[in-house]
Image 1: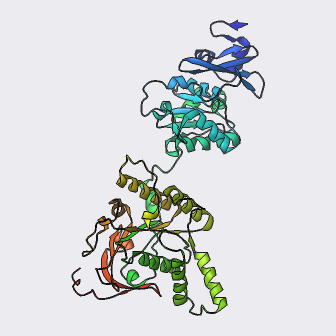
Image 2 (image 1 turned 180 degrees about the vertical axis):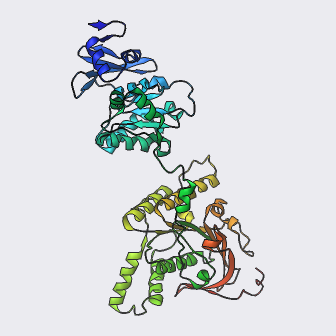
Image 3 (image 1 turned 90 degrees about the horizontal axis):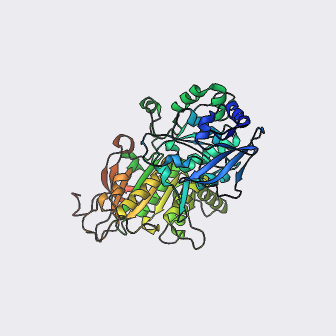
Length: 489
């Protein structure tokens, strides 16, 4: 016998009630009996695209779509997301339609269900989630407009292996900071289990207690008090250590100056002595100008002058080469690949994760190729690049050393400031430290070394200026008198 008011047979009504589902609520959302199953209609813009038919009372709840072969790219109940939405509203995302009906029964308004559940691999789940939540535009996935109006998504996937995989895929696509989760009582695998075993009030209470999944959005002050202070790293150079100049992990340093000012030599001096003073550090270098043999020869010379002078001995040469291979490497694109910024980010991450590198030197920055929207602002693009490098540095505890040119035209008679760095003032504003190197015209043996910025004077040293001589054998900086006529700089 079939209840004509709701289109659900008594047999199927009893099955729904046994699952805790209110029959009238189910009928309101178009659920109806269909031969030997319960049909759950999928609508898009008011038009039914297909039914998902649950074969009940089979324990495995086997289901099929009618008509077969439909494109399952729309979530169930998607039409409920039309119109304006309160910015505080939560969109509940379930793995199955019965779970979504359970959430609706608990009094929530916005809920959708995945059309085809979970897959058993992260790749399969990502494919399902992107198909439902995203449009692909020029190879990139963007949330569909119906979903972008929500800033909070409560994930109610099944508490099993496939459900956990689906949950990870949803977090990756929707963004961890926008996702909420809630507690499942013992013995409950999904929202319908909670409704059926614990009742609608318990389910409603648990939904209201949903909390952010990610911890990145908030750090309590009490937790901040317990955080260790930044570790100070000596640079291994007497003139710099004596001035209190230090690095940390993570750290972002920009070393700038005009052409032939010695900025690359200073950067290599600082790098080699940093590694010698902090034996846990290993470095990778992007060397964009000149032959790779130049910094390699300098490292070999540094080893001879500072570790073992007997490099004519084949055994010592072998030890030197082993030391260099262990602590130093180059970053180089494959084949004809260009050194683009995205390549740089990926390579830094790969070297850090796979080869234990913790220090990265980019020399010079202008040899990195940038693919950007030419309608955009260059300084904003540079800001984004620095932020992305610093975010990677923060995530993995890396030291970034960027060697950069001064903008042109430049008055060579006066020392540049950190705001003379090319392309953007963000080099000065966003770096933890900025070092400026400058040589007056016709003076080759003396360089003005300036620590122009230090984000924390107590931890990393106060800004200072000093005239130095660059010893390219020992790779040390020695303080010297100012050149004649430049005593007041």
